[in-house]
Length: 139
Image 1 (cartoon, rainbow, N blue to C red):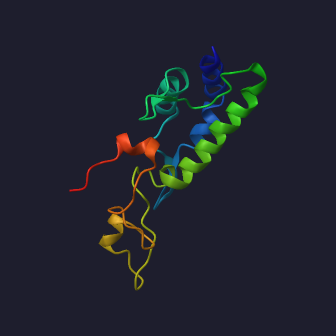
Image 2: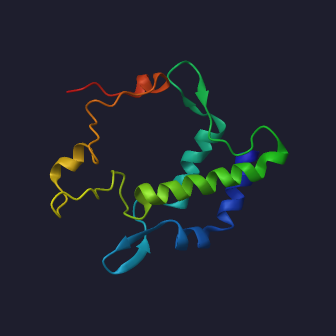
């Protein structure tokens, strides 16, 4: 029930979301995202709010939309807003699912940034214990 209420809430705001959130910056200005859509978000949210996702330790992680109490629906909507705000900075605006390369070295964006920026090395990143099951083995 809670997901259907949220879905209706978001669909009623489709025009606003598609013109302000699900957009990308192009050399010609702002345009509709070709990668991210409200329908895509709703598809994923249905699973994450009703079934959840395995946490790697036999537990289940749920995207919180106020499932536990009718009084918490507003917290769930805020959670969606925060998620979309974060997603905008991480990929929506550039229509990518990759890390945005912005660490200049001598005025250029080096190819090596594909393996980490700001002295970060993905080869030495270690996942928290809850994420170990999703960690990829090193080549």
